Structures are given as structure tokens and as C-alpha cells.
Figure 1: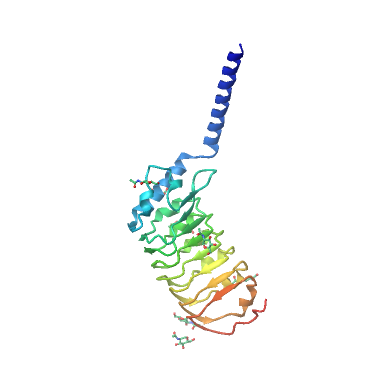
Figure 2 (figure 1 turned 90 degrees about the vertical axis):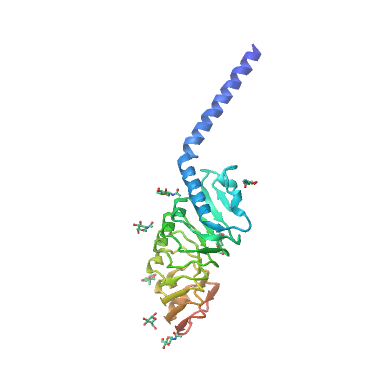
Amino acid sequence: MEHHYYVNSGKFLLCFLHVLQLLWGTSGLDSATIESDRLALLDFKSRITQDPLQIMSSWNDSTSFCYWIGVECSPVDGRVTILNLESKKLVGSIPPSLGNLTSLTGFNLRHNNFRGQIPEEIGHIQGLQDLNLSHNYFGGEIPMNLTHCTGLKALDVHYKELVGWIPDRLSSLLQLEFLRLGGNHLTGIIPAWIWNFSSLKTLSLTMNNLNGSIPNELGKLSGLGFFQLYGNNLSGIVGNLDH
Ligand SMILES: *[C@@H]1O[C@H](CO)[C@@H](O)[C@H](O)[C@H]1NC(C)=O
Ligand SMILES: *[C@@H]1O[C@H](CO)[C@@H](O)[C@H](O)[C@H]1NC(C)=O
Ligand SMILES: *[C@@H]1O[C@H](CO)[C@@H](O)[C@H](O)[C@H]1NC(C)=O
Ligand SMILES: *[C@@H]1O[C@H](CO)[C@@H](O)[C@H](O)[C@H]1NC(C)=O
Ligand SMILES: *[C@@H]1O[C@H](CO)[C@@H](O)[C@H](O)[C@H]1NC(C)=O
Ligand SMILES: *[C@@H]1O[C@H](CO)[C@@H](O)[C@H](O)[C@H]1NC(C)=O
Ligand SMILES: *[C@@H]1O[C@H](CO)[C@@H](O)[C@H](O)[C@H]1NC(C)=O
């Protein structure tokens, strides 16, 4: 009798666990969005033309993409949250399908040899907080659609081939703490709205072709700890920095 009792409770326990698994499956892991992330990562891999450290060989189907070098996933829904391939000696470009990684919060390709444009599709990633692309060879303009990433805290496209004006639409990025646009070929004036970014801690616009005057409003950025403008054609007096 007792034996029978244990068997039944064991079955009940298994059944209970299975229901939990089913609940987890429907509320958390969604296989369609996970597959979409996997395809976007493989598309990214296909745009890598040189990889002397063979980083991309870990990006294979023997493991879930959450174990691939540079990839971090959310423990809740299994989607990609961070892509960090800093200083991996990679040559390649960013495909538009990067914008399919809609759970991404951090994207870091600093110190590689990426070329081509930063795709406008990056604007699909509305929860993006860090876009760290400095020290590559990105050309073209700063993508307008970054304006949709209103939670952006770090925008680092320092160095080297970007052209055009600083897009006015970036004025929506009021959470920015870290803004580095230096070492490119940006032209035009420093937009007045930059001085309204009260969260800003680091601002570098150095070594571009910016002109016009440095406004008095600079003093409004009381949290600014690092500030560089040299290497432009600016005039004016930096006032009110006594915060
Ligand atoms: C990215 O998403 C678009 C729109 O859903 C789709 O057409 C495209 O095939 C996706 N790209 C990749 C590489 O998965
Ligand atoms: C696949 O990736 C794993 C690590 O994720 C690695 O150990 C293995 O060598 C890779 N396989 C190939 C064929 O490169
Ligand atoms: C991007 O850069 C900022 C500023 O240096 C840093 O705080 C942040 O951790 C970086 N993000 C990633 C994903 O590497
Ligand atoms: C850029 O954003 C606009 C809306 O502001 C949208 O219509 C357009 O499709 C976006 N472009 C890309 C390439 O995602
Ligand atoms: C900066 O913010 C003030 C209000 O705090 C607003 O009146 C002004 O228009 C803003 N300037 C720009 C250039 O957005
Ligand atoms: C800044 O340079 C542009 C050309 O790049 C010129 O049209 C404009 O008049 C200049 N503005 C100032 C204030 O010097
Ligand atoms: C800098 O701007 C002034 C006008 O504000 C202009 O006369 C001068 O030629 C410019 N210098 C360079 C190197 O562009």
C-alpha cells in the first residue's frame, strides 16, 4: 500500500513539474523570437570577412547562441541582451538585420575594423542603452533613427570616417551620459540642444570640422566631468563652468 502511495505521489510531482514547464514555455521562452535572434546573429557572422582570432568559430550550432563569444542573453526570455566584441580584430560590416535583435541593451564593437554605414535599422532596438562603436572605419552619417532609442545612455562613435551634421533629431536622447563623436569629419555647428542634456557626464566632439561659437549654456551641464572640443573651428568663451 505504501509503495503504491509513493508511486502515485511521484507521478503527481512529475505532472506538476510538467505543468510548470508548460507555463514557463508559454510565458517566458518564445521560440519564434529566439530563432529570429539566432538568424540575425548568423547574418552578422556572415558579414565578418576577417577574423584572425577565430572568434566566430565559437558561433556554431553545437551550443545555444547564449554561449557564443560576446553574446549575453536574458535569463527570463533567452533573447540576446548584450553583444560585446570589443578588440577582437574583426573586419566586416553591420547588416541591417542587427535591428532584429530587439532585446539588445548593449552593443560594443570598439577597436575593430568595421566599415560601411551604421544601419538605420538600429532604431528598431528601442531599449538600446549603449552603442559603443568607436575606433573602427564607419562612414556615412550618424543614423537619424537613433532618435527612437530614447533610453540611450552611451553613444560612442569616436573615430573615424563619419560625415555630415550632428542630426537635430538626436535631441530626443535626453538620457545620454556619454557622448563621443570626435575624430570624424562632422561639419556644421554644435547644436544648441546638446546643452540641454543634463545627464551628460562625458562630451567629446574633438577633431571634427565643427564651426560657430561655443554657447554660454555650456555652464548648464553641471554633471559634466569630461569635456573636449579641441581640433574644431570654434569661437567663444567658455563661461559659467564654476559648478
Ligand atoms: C529581420 O527581420 C525582417 C523583418 O521581420 C525579416 O524580413 C528578415 O528576414 C530578418 N533578417 C534576418 C537575418 O533574420
Ligand atoms: C563550436 O563552438 C565550440 C564552443 O562554443 C567550440 O568548442 C568548437 O570547437 C566549435 N566547433 C567548430 C567546428 O568550430
Ligand atoms: C559602452 O561605453 C560606456 C562608456 O564607456 C560603458 O559604461 C558601457 O559599459 C559600454 N557598454 C558596453 C556594452 O560595452
Ligand atoms: C526610420 O524611422 C522611420 C520613422 O521615423 C521609419 O518610417 C523607417 O522605416 C525607419 N527606417 C528604418 C530603416 O528602419
Ligand atoms: C532647452 O530646454 C529649455 C527648457 O529647459 C527650452 O526652453 C529650450 O527650448 C531647450 N533648447 C533646445 C535647443 O532644445
Ligand atoms: C560653418 O561652416 C559652414 C560650411 O561648412 C558654413 O556654411 C557656415 O556659414 C559656417 N558657420 C559659421 C558660424 O562659421
Ligand atoms: C574658421 O572660421 C572662420 C570664420 O568663423 C573662417 O574665417 C576661417 O577660415 C575658418 N578656418 C578654417 C580652418 O576653417
